[in-house]
Amino acid sequence: METIDTRLLIDFNIGMKIKERTTYDLDSEQFRYLKREESSNFHRVDINDLNKRLNETKKTSFYTTTLVVIVCFSFLTALALIGIKF
Image (cartoon, rainbow, N blue to C red):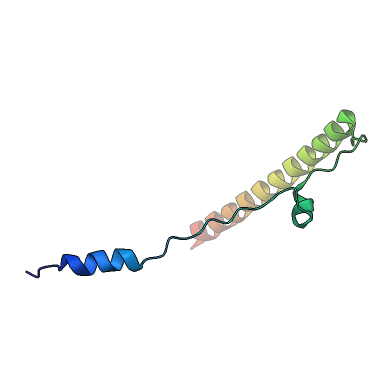
């Protein structure tokens, strides 16, 4: 079992530097990109147009999923028929 010399610990703690804190001024020109620009024009979205696009995407997604399921079942039936013949 080793003994620890307390004088070394004290000298080590004195020798450590305290890290300085950096403060940033957000009002300076350097950080102007962080500020939100006030604009009176808001881009309004038409809800009917969004619903129409959503319905179209749902339809194409449903058709794609149905097609993938049919192709998978046809391959499984083909494999089953080949397995039954041999």
